[in-house]
View 1: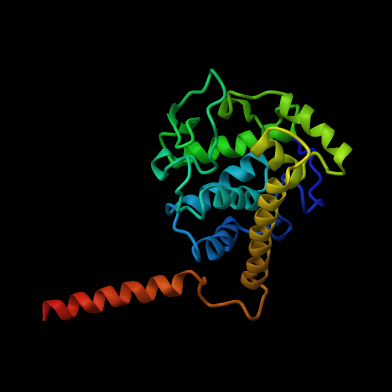
View 2: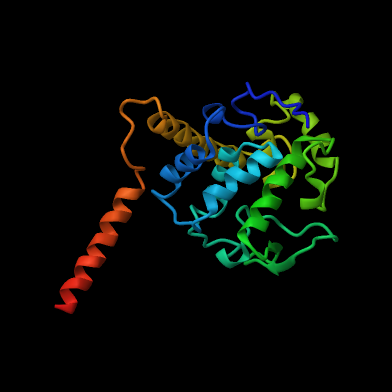
Amino acid sequence: MGNPTNNSISNSVKGVPSWARGKPGEYMIEVLRSVIRKRGNPPADFERLMVEKGLIYQVRFDVLAAISMLETNWWNFGGNVTPDMNNPAGIRCQCKKYPLACRQGTNGETYGAYKTLEDGIKHFAAHMFCYTSSVDWANARPADPCWSEWYSQELRKAKVYGLEPDSIDACYSLWRDGALPPTQSCKEAVASIKVIVAEFEKAAKELAPDNPNKPSLPSWLLPVGIGLLAIFLWGKRARQ
């Protein structure tokens, strides 16, 4: 299967992050976890599923994860969707052929409610692929029944505003507001997404296998271990 993307564009939502090329999946997952677990606590398989589905549909899993962290407030929610909806990106029900339950959000609009988190992330990744591709070379259509060439046709207009059609700026603007150019509030949101992506890049350098200063344990693991140890000692004392 061919890949028509240009991965040299760091602002592109396509392909894989430059720091992940040629690296094992465990490393990619560790990088995401090292950043996400400092501020959020999504389900245990969240990072693995982001990497897995991003690679399948050839959209950058670090961008997907950053958008999800922004949309869910680092998995603390409080907005229009709830954790049990397994909707990691706040995808709305806009297609009559949606093969999933739709629930009303706090703003009165309907949002996808997926049976599993894997289903939600799969649709999220496939949906993002549909935004930038007019040909379904990644076989995303079965995962996104709302497939339409409309997305890519609209994104072609991005160049009028000095943006690349596959850029985070253009894609998120269409995702968030359904139109170009990005509004001021959308630009602020995109800036937040890029900050998170930059955090992943920084963590990737720190955790790189060839980095002599690499921590012996993932940064998220130490506080978890300390907490478990405290619980163990407290329980042992209580039994004495």
